[in-house]
Image (cartoon, rainbow, N blue to C red):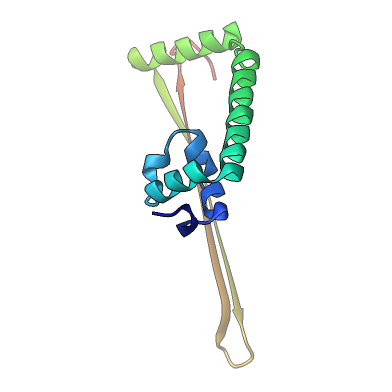
Length: 131
């Protein structure tokens, strides 16, 4: 298969799959591999994208290694203990329904809009807490 059977744009639009090693997920894998072997500009662009990707990954590893605050650890621990000990369960629910109908001069419905919004928030509270 000639590398001209797939265009550079098609190869470069799949660059994230190539850089992250997931080329096998693409149906045109063999055409892309053949193109990369023979196309110097695409090979150079992929090398550049790999370098940027690796630099970004390394920067994130070095800078995003903060630990959660101790009070968060304790709050999560209390919630887990309350769940396991059969703590009090409190469920809060919010619901809203909005209906809007427009009727023309002949009594025909021109526009109808129905919005339903529902939120469930579930809290597990330790039996000793007052909330």
